[in-house]
Image (cartoon, rainbow, N blue to C red; front, side, top):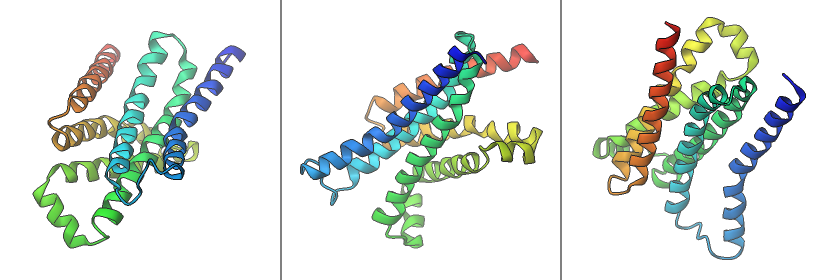
Length: 197
């Protein structure tokens, strides 16, 4: 990897981490200035979900971007994007379980029965958790070839997340836009897989 490519990757990492942290800064600023009411967690809950989805889409965008720009070193940006997706998904799931469900299993089961899209979100979170826990070089060495197979679950995760978002916010255009973009990324991946086969 050339010095230019290395500096590009380093800059990309900084931008990704800044983007991941920025909402926290604005939430804190909003709370200090009285513009954010922490007693009403709904908007924060929604923000966490949007950030998780955004970083998941960004994770899937890295490989096509690296191929189109002919810059393989950009692949190294997938991990920080994926970890930020997991981090925001964990916050989203945490608010749901702790704030809304009060850690009451019976309430969780009832919520899933009444709104099945919650189950899709929970399943997607378990996938992201698995991918985050196995994202290190050590995990790659331990899993060997199985690591690549395991991390293909990201494609299932994006389908689950987009469906979850669509069913939860069916009247909004945002889930539809996310689904279209995700479909484009999946088609790109499928085309690349067919070329190699």
